[in-house]
Length: 397
Ligand code: NAD
Ligand code: DAU
Image (cartoon, rainbow, N blue to C red; front, top):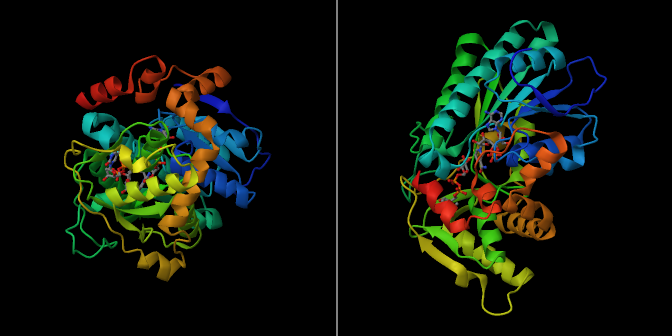
C-alpha cells in the first residue's frame, strides 16, 4: 500500500462482524475521553485513527495499551487509501469524527492547517465513508451512522440579552477555526441531502475536564496557578462561554449515536453561562480551598493581557432539543465538574508534567518509533526556550 501507515499498537480483535466504531481524533481531549468511557462501559471495540499532532497524546490512552478492544492507527484523515483499507478491514457500524485542529488562537496565526484538516480532511473522510456505506446492504446499511462533532462557535457571537443558539440559528463563524468547522458541517449536511449518507451533527459548547491540553483556558489557568505564573485573562475578561463537563458531552454523543435521527443536528450545552473572569475566580477559590498557597490567594496571579483578535463576546446554548428527543441532560453543574477537574489535575502531576515538558511526545517516539515531533509551544520549552519567548514568537507568526 502506498503512503505512510504507522501502527502504534495494533491488536487483532478476533471479530469479523461489523460491531465496531471508527473514531477519528481519539488521542485528543474529547476523543480520548470518549474512547475511555466507551470501553469502560461496553465491550464493542474501537478503531482509533489519529495523526498525533501536538494535541494527540497516547499517554492519555496508556491504560488501553494491552486492551484487545482498542486498535490504534496513526494516520491522517487526508489519507484516503488508509481510510479505505480501514473501512474494508474493520467494517465499522459507525464513525465518530472528532479529529480537527481545535484551538482558536492557533487558527488566528496559522489558518492553513485548519482548512486542510477540518475541511479537506473531513471531505476525504466523508468520501471514504460514502464509498464504504454504498457497498453495505440490508441491516448493515440501515444502521450505519456518521456522527460529526462540531461546535457552538459556527453560530458566531451573541448580544448580552439575545436568546441562546438553537439548531436553526444562522451560521456566522468569526474565526478561521469556526469558519473551517462551519465548512465541514456544510459538507456533512450535503452528504446527507445529496447521497443519503446517514449523518448526524452535534454542536457542543466549551468542554473541560480530565486530559485537556493546557493551551485551553481552564487547564492553562490551573497549570499556571500551580506553577505560580500569571493567569492571562484576555481583554476585560467579560466574554461569556457555556461550560460543559467532558463526561457529560460523551454521554450526549452516546445518546446521539444510539437514538439520533440521521440528517438531524443537536446542540449540546452545559447550562453554565459564565464570564471568563468568573471562571478564573471560581477556579482560584477551588484551589485556595484544596491546595492553599502559603500566603495570599491564587486570584492574586490574575493578569489582564491583550485581547484575542475577533474575540466572540458571548456563546450560549439552547440544548432543549437533545433533552426532549433523546433524553440527555448534563449531570454536572459547573461547580461539581470543576471540582472533579481540579482534583484530576492535582492527582495526575505526571500526565501534566509530561505535557508541559513535551515528554509526552518523547514517550510516544521512544516506545513506538514515530516521526519527529513538530514544533510546538511545549516542545520548544522542553528544549530550553522560555515560555514567554515561545508564546510570543508563535503568536507573532
Ligand atoms: P484536540 O485538539 O484535543 O484533539 C484533536 C485530535 O485530532 C488530536 O488527537 C489530533 O492528533 C487529531 N488530529 C488533528 N488533525 C488530524 C488529522 N489530519 N488526521 C487525524 N487526526 C488528526 O480537540 P478536542 O478538544 O478533543 O476536540 C475534538 C472535536 O470537538 C473537534 O472536532 C473540535 O472542533 C470539537 N469541539 C471541541 C470543543 C472543546 O471545548 N474542546 C468544543 C466544541 C467542539
Ligand atoms: O465553544 C466551543 C469551542 O471552545 C471549541 O469549538 C474549541 O475547539 C475550543 O478550543 C473552545 O474555544 P474557545 O476559544 O472558547 O476556548 P479557549 O479555552 O481557548 O478560551 C476560552 C475563553 O477564555 C475565550 O473567551 C478566550 C479566553 N482565554 C483563553 C485563553 C487560552 C483567556 O482569557 N486567556 C487564555 O489564556
